[in-house]
Amino acid sequence: MFCAQRRSWKLQGRRLLRNVEPGFRRTLLTKSSVVGSLEPPLSLQTLPDFFNTEILSNHAHLPALICRQEKPRAHGGPPSRNLDVQTHLSWDYEEFDRHIGALARGLIGMGVKKGDRVGVIMGNNSSYAMLQWACASVGAILVTLNPAYRLPELVDTLALSGVSHLFITPRIRSSSYIRLFAEAFAEIRSQQPGDIQTPILPELNNLVVVRNEAEADAEAAKVIDELKLRCTVDWREVMMWTQGSGVREEKERRMRERQLTKDDIVNLQFTSGTTGSPKAVSLTHSNLLNNGISIGQAMNLTEKDILCNVPPLFHCFGLVLGNLAAWTHGSCVVYAAPVLDPPAIVDAIVEERCTALHGVPTHFLGVLEEVKKRNAWNQMGSLRTGIAAGSPVPIDLMKRLIDGLNLTELTVAYGMTETSPVSFQSTAEDAVIKRVETVGKIRPHVKAKIVGSDGNVVDVGKPGEILVAGYLLQKGYWNDQNQTEQVMKEDQDGTLWMHTGDEGIMDEEGYLKIVGRIKDIIIRGGENLFPVQIENATTVHPDIREAAAISVPDMKYGEVVGVWIVREPGSKISREDVRTTVMKSINPQNAPAWVWFIGEDGESKELPKTASGKVMKHILRAWGKGLSERGVGRAC
Image 1 (tube, rainbow, N blue to C red):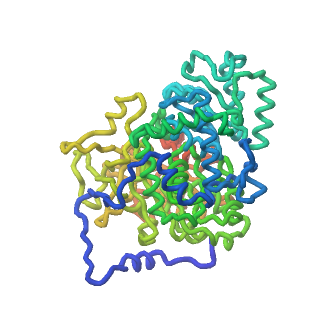
Image 2: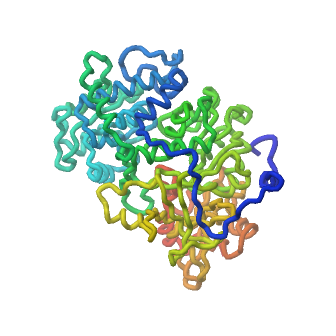
Image 3: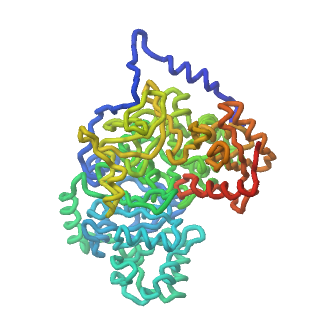
């Protein structure tokens, strides 16, 4: 039980769907093809132009950024107002802009040129937020790197993107990045700052260490002294505060801003890589700015909103759906902690009176558990909206979020890194049942269609691959024309379409339901079964926390359903119970022939996921194949 009152979902959904003016007749679709509205017009500005003319000029003295685990003066420089908060960093937009300017001048001073790639390996903190705007200001390309990368992955991504300047935090969780670099590239230890030379990463010149927190500062000092590192640059030395000593750099910055165009690449984001090596997605000012504006509009964000931005900033979810959606509407962004920390998130919601909360299912489950532990349901009253995305959101979880966390205007977004990322999103005006069961409708200035294996648009209600077109398409994969051409293709009318690889079903009103990745579809005896539908049917059981459905090779049917289950603590649910639960709500063919419990069948204690929360099903398929061959997990 997550709150005192439960909603009647079916009745509420029907009531809202019938809320139509008398005499109004909707035009219903027959084919799965939609075109978004052309209003409001797209912004033709660059990110720094928009910040100066639309954000700073209208919201200068309103809260912009709150970092609850950073001290007020983490970056040196003259004292700031810090919104009169003594315990942690808390800036209005004017103070935020002052820090962005100091960093932009510092980047120019350390040799960052237009088009240079600036890599970042950090958790959610103020330095990351400043770099997002400062790099855009000087014409550099921000390269957001996954802190979970091991050394080979990190070297590959740095080499692929040609990073010249790398900003790192001393440690994230158990990973010490200073030590990792110093031990992997011993030759750089005695080299001069700004003149790093290593044959493995020939374009890397600068290694900047960011010490925003006291613990990070101590960690950095210890490792630098122990390994006798001379090659690193302290973040606070990069910041160029005094206007007198930064006149040249400020003049250069203004000149660069004037030379920027909306179609310049401003960000390289790496795809999640659930099945292979990540690719670098090239995103422009226009991509990110307009997508952020659109997302915030769907949420009805205003200068009165305070967003607790939980998803990591190396991912589009944190950087665009979080930061840009909020800041383009004058809202405030709160980082509860550098990494996922449910107790810190709940503290932030309560103490900062957050009105919005973003997350993937894993994040939300952690928050729900923490609120339940504290019995703090009545302290969630400030919340109203947010976004659930990143991976399919079970219907039962959506209900719990709306009921338990007061997220009555919670929206669901669909997209991919290559589309900046959001192409479909529900809104607060949509019927609750539509927000629970679909990812909403097409966003403005976007086209989408669902096609069959023959390439033709399918009828509504029929599954097929989702294709997307419009301003939001990436420029292409960085230095990979072959991969780009495989997924971005022009039709006979000259429209460029992104082939998403996702399977979807569109209804007659244009609402989209995601049924899974095409490669994840289970073909049992010639019938297509959709993992998301099976997972939704499974997680309605109160003893099941998470479920992941996969295909398992079978002599008779070719493939059958296998499900990996994460039990709720203390649950004793059996394989037969799981199978019965599925058969109660959907066709019996969807019932799993194999059921495995995470933490019991095999060594892993959690579902394998990317850092953005997507389940890596290729790993689960390999595990399932091996266990089924040994007869482990049979449910029927």
